[in-house]
Length: 605
Image (cartoon, rainbow, N blue to C red; front, side):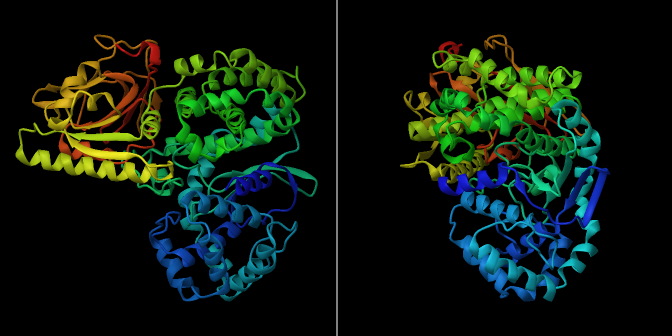
């Protein structure tokens, strides 16, 4: 898998001389910017659907469009193009391998003209792809009149294009990048699939001596950028484990656009920084302790996330993330704050320091003091070297990276055991059985989640009355509130969130401060359909909560608490594995998230 990853990185991140497929169903926010549902990508998606069916992890349920695909192309399941793709991808049995290979194939296709000709302006891909798969694709496209189908479904593609175009209008990349990167004469191309979720990637060919910067694929996998809107929930995929996502989503076109804009500027951040990072690799080689610090705390994350497979991979990501954060601060500074907290949660303890360095350098480029941003990269590397040394990196990490379910479940892998605890004290006799079923669903998810950990993890479901004092020191998932779950009742004085009864209904409030020590103070965000604000948690009814803290009985381990105002709301978070905030509260109308740190040396209170 590492060899495959290295090949993909070379293809995706290095500039090539090529011509991409000509735009078809495309939109031009400005003369130098194009965004489209790419016909080559969609042809690949339809072939993929015919090969693996509508229930495959990567196939998006597009409603009537999917029915049209079946009606138009269903008779061609035995076509050689379908057989070749099925044969090739079936060799990759894990979801991550399939994810990377599918991204690989889409990238190759972007270097061909549109169907049915699929002329290779620059021959990309292995021999079987060029000599077998491409001829079969041409034949399939001609026999099925693919381009007629593609053009006739422009209105369907607008489901995604409305988000893409709206986002690019918020911050047009041509003007922003010229101002702050110092590179001119660039054209911007964003080429996306529709039916099948292809992992997002950079796309930066040279076309007729003109440099192109842009992206292919779709929004990143859910574990890097958690999706929280109706639209992004529909397209998001857990491309590490194939787990189903929870329904804690809101209807927000604005957040849709910010999510997409973050994806775009992350990939453009690679274009701006990678050449200089490669040139200064001697410096990077002395900075492997940045990534090693994350790996020491979250070794399971480092096992399943491809960015850790190179010892400096997360530093490359950090530079792209910092450029993304700088760009989106021009649109919504609160979204930038939220994005940076989630980046810290993924281990990037240096992201805030790097963000301010990127901001300073980019402004100098804008003022004409620096010719282009590549000059800034070695300065930023030296800034990071001054920020953290091998001796103090772990201490800085502990004071910057929030406690999250992500860290909690990584600790569970290291310990080899997680106990999911349900309550038996529910006044309603049927409540105990319901909570036990919820706990079993959570445990089933965790067992699938731990599928890549060597030796496995023992995931138990246990009633609160069967927990020993020693058990209560372990890595725990507590299901339900203090009325039903004795373990929660015994610990909630240490929780920063708790339920209280107000006028006969259970509501959540924030208890950080007294008696719970929270220093430094948590960072809060409230997200609704129209805005993101920095606000503390208010009383709210009909709420569900997922929260992580260090275990008060043994701070080396963690407690994840999942609860709701009633038993149905508790069941919302049956997949707790992908949360990058210390807590999330969801009431069906808005999301409230918070981030707090609990350094191991000061987590006892």
